[in-house]
Amino acid sequence: MPFTVSLVWDIRSFKQPVATRSGVPTLYPSTNAIFSPDNKYVVTGAAGTEQGDYGGLLFMSRENLEVVKQLDVGATPVVVQWHPKINQVRSSLVTVRSLNKQRRLL
Image 1 (spheres, rainbow, N blue to C red):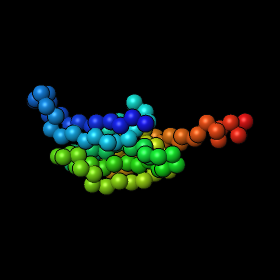
Image 2: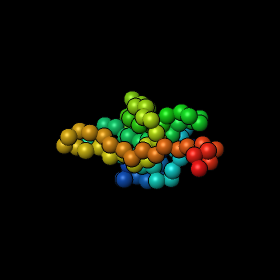
Image 3: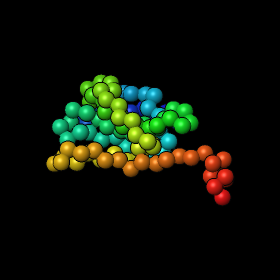
Image 4: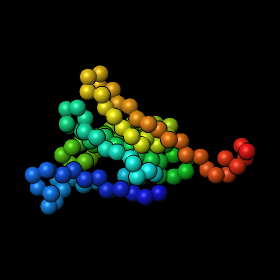
């Protein structure tokens, strides 16, 4: 399971990031990170670190990428969206099952 580094950049200066966060487990290269409608938070999906663990949504402060809130969900969040008018967060979730369980089902 690869770990990613999340970066926040200032478009006026690309020489160094404003903030970095490592140790966010992901299973898919298409996992995204978004800003909240008020630009106070960065939200991304994180996978469980061990087999059987739940994934979750990480709400991080935009300034330093410290986790403000972690919302556990029953699967791995891949794509996160935050609707600005109704203030709801939605995510596509992927459940990963072991190959042994899939073989037993066949």
